[in-house]
Length: 289
Image 1 (cartoon, rainbow, N blue to C red):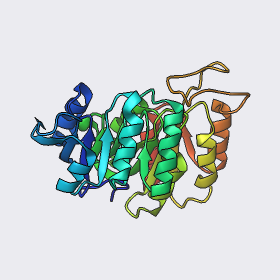
Image 2 (image 1 turned 90 degrees about the vertical axis):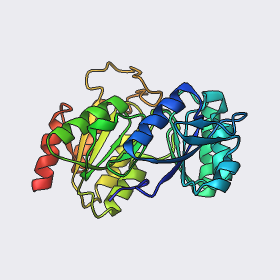
Image 3 (image 1 turned 60 degrees about the vertical axis):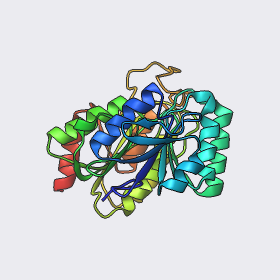
């Protein structure tokens, strides 16, 4: 079973006629995702890979039973695109775009909370429920259906870990990229709660990094989980105060360090891998135990 998106997910692509929107629409279609429509103002009537393009989200929703939207709009236009989608009744948003202004992110999340909309990102690789649906930029070939839920802040690390799970014969229920910005929609805890409730997810993998307190907050919830949790954290050798590739990966005043996160997760009962490829070994042990 998947969380957030499944085979019934009907997708809208905002920014479908752009280079990234067009390329990743083709990849989602190749994976079997139900991409029903795209939006690109002024280009209504076009088709991209056989997908009809509309000028507005409202027009697309009127013609198709859209459940989710993925946004490939340049950063200055993301707020308007997100609010347009939410106003049209779409309940799941995946925002791929990087460099969205902080105050725009705050406005998006406030509106999402008001309308009970699930937002993944911004600055995310997206979400995939292997064998069912995909909304994102992750490689198609490295995932396989199975019992392991994965939630990550880092895209490339999550790809490596998912690939290692797959080559070891361990499939995934859903893989979620939270996004690397200071302000994002779903948190580790939000996704962990969904995996905890999912009867077919047997083990959960948390892929974190230095900076912020998201992993420490997740540890508080992990204490009450009934399912095994395996974690990997990037930034073991980063010097104090180092900023990594994400805006959220900044160590401030002794908080958000590698050591503090490992300590919190370990105390909560999670098994913390030292190296990425060790995750599959720990997951296998958890499944067999």
